[in-house]
Length: 409
Image (cartoon, rainbow, N blue to C red; front, side, top):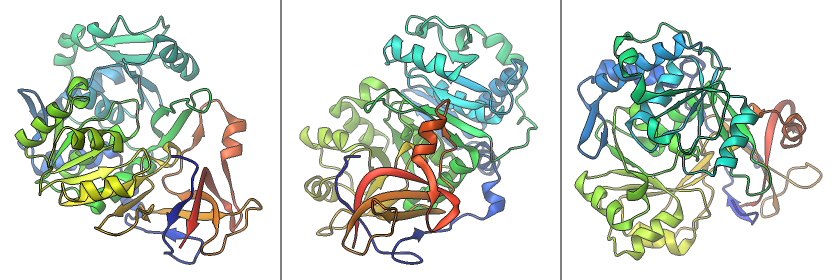
């Protein structure tokens, strides 16, 4: 997000802290995959994934993920074993993410659209030992000492693996995923997100903005961005349906409009750039659509245009280091765009340069604490210490300094 003054609403325990609790300690100890397994039990024959003319029910998705999870266990995957995934946007992308979580491993997305030197840096920095890919992706992968599992070449082995849920316990402190920042401000950094943080996020988002069994989400985000994890997991936690747009469809306004209409999409998350692309193409919207907009600053002009194209419009904000989105705001005509309310079990603080709380109306730096906080940066202890700092109000707690300037109102 740009380093500019944005507004934080004056809510919460006091003028300097905002928090909302939506999940108890027992639910947070469950893994994201366990929340999805609940939905498999509840509605096994409901559609879970659609891509083109292909579809998978919850039962079929779970079976495929279980087979791959057992296969990964045989390959030595265990707690916090990094497993890279280098695949085009596909059903296999979702199956692989879910399988890694079921195998107690840690998901590392490797965008096949990245330059080879960028992928090589990520592979070397993470020291990943196992990569899930496809024969068609071999040309984009750099040389690596990691074992590469080509899904189309191990079909027989996967077919012989058990379909049952792996009997593994979930440790909420273990890493769910490692994702590299864009590197726009320097060398890419691997951000370590724990399972507890991801579970907390999914439970919170399922309640507000809310996703229901009757919803259909159009997934358009490249796997290199952490918001793709919301698209791949949140609908499944809620028992909803995911329609996957290919990379080509996601960059073509007319193709997106066709998907939105063909599948009667009710939820779509995208950056302001994607929403502008749709509007510029003549898209008129849908009265049933819930729009989530984030990743860049949402202007009032764009917000006002989008409000005429949907049932609900939500502004989303959050650094990678605090698990996807940290705050959400439901927008209404004529209302200013704010950061909104923190998501569940998340706290906002605004401090001046001396790390003292600012007064209402004053500009300060936004700090974020709570369950969504990352474990830090992989192999970057000095940077971790610089960005993840003690809370001056509660020194036993750690908070993340965003670098974003905000103002309390």
